[in-house]
Image 1: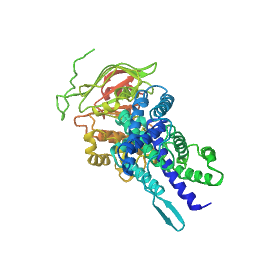
Image 2: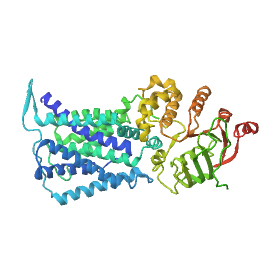
Image 3: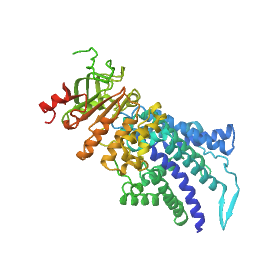
Amino acid sequence: MEIWFVISNAIVLACIYGTLAIGVSITWSSLGLLNLAYGFIFAFAGFGAWVVSQQVSAWGPVLLATGILTGALGGVVVCALAFIPIHDKPNFTIRGLIGTLAINLLGTQGLLWWFGPRAKTLPGIFGDWKISMSGMVLSADKIGNVLTSILMLVVVLRWMQGSRRGLEIRAMMMNPHAAAIVGIGVRRTSFYVMAITGGLAGLAAVLLSQTYYISPFGGLTPMIKGVSIALCGGLGSVRGAVIAAMVLGLNESLTTVTIGGQYVLITQFVFIIAILLVRPRGIAGILDKAREA
Amino acid sequence: MNYMPQQPPEIAGRPAVSREVLNVRGLSAGYGPMRVIHDLDLVVNAGERVGIVGLNGHGKSTLFYGIAGLTGWQRGSIRLNGVEVGRTRSQGPGRYTHEIVRAGLALIPQGDEIFHGLTVEEHLDSGAFTPRAWRERATRKQRILKIFPPLKKLMNVPVGRLSGGERRMVSIGRGLMADASLFLVDEPSLGLAPKIGRSVIEALMGVELGDSAMVIAEQNVALLEGRVDRILGMHAGQLKGEASAAALAIHDYGRG
């Protein structure tokens, strides 16, 4: 077992899953919506990038941008269908869960019907060069994956820290009722939130397509991992999600090299259950310094 | 019922012709099957400070929430600066609140409706979501710091770590950041030590209203006596009588 191989794999997985988990986390805490259509948005963005690679250009940055944009579009569509009509109705949490799950099922079946069951591959985005440093070999897509997802996260988080819309979203994440009182419109903000989290899912889809195939149901496992990492990090906490993604990425790559890839989900969930038993609010429960309102 | 616009008596140092900021006619509001506000009328003129006193559970907060569109349902007319913002509707509390805020309402809610993870500065910014207030937010923040000097060295501290009195200052400061013509202040002294409660009320009295108006709901009538232009009593979802602070003091109204 090579220690550097495990660590570099862990970092790559952490970056991609972290991107997904932060999307889940932001949607849950600002809109109160556990977005189960995330898998569909993921696959939709993958196919969007694939169509562009076939029809327009297979240049890496174009594919990344297409993935992000189609992901954002998918997010907006889900928002218009599953959030806007029901967000102020009774029992919204359960209805939202069912609504997004329905969109997920319908959407993935739609993709299957339109594109057929054969998995698609995207051309390599980052080329096939390698760097070797002190016995550690880093391939281009590993470095590219890490850099792009970190760049995207930094841009999104900076935007949320520094801009007026970002302040609106963070305010809604902390106290939706008070957000209404200061004059933040839930409906408009929800479109921003869903577009951004959809864009994050789209980016993750294009990055993961460097390792896996694009298929209509390919979003299911990443979505489950994203949701479970978000839970483990503490829903609503971006820092918690990042730490959980690193820990679970390490867990995944360690499990793969020690007992085999088919046990990844088992060890992952045992790990998450263990964390939630000790800290019911997830890792954020350890980090938070501010009292709840 | 008198539907003619009411002109307030002329007070020295204030323009004789006054404008109606808020005109509520026949408002009923509540949550689900419960009706809390019953056919309520209220007129507030520009430059006025109005106190509403009443016991717990008689609808002071619900009146404010009704004006802000935050109740479960409401019926009746609410005119804010002459614009109708009342709706007859039965669901979606908060759905139109941002439009009412844009029309000139600043609600300073009861208790601490704060964003516990935002810093004091971000919190004040979040009160300035109307376009003009957002552009002027730097100067407005300075104005708030003049009213509440203790906040000056807390600007970068998350609000969740502040004490109750400091949180109330932040909450009121957030309301005062807005471009509002009507400030609704709900129980500003609630849950605070009497001395801090009094200083919060003092700060509210020190706010220059200009063309705007302020309505303060309070249980402790002694805190408002002689400081507001008029005091109304809230009882069982209706405003009872309209008396001067002095008259209220004689009848000891609103103390139980």
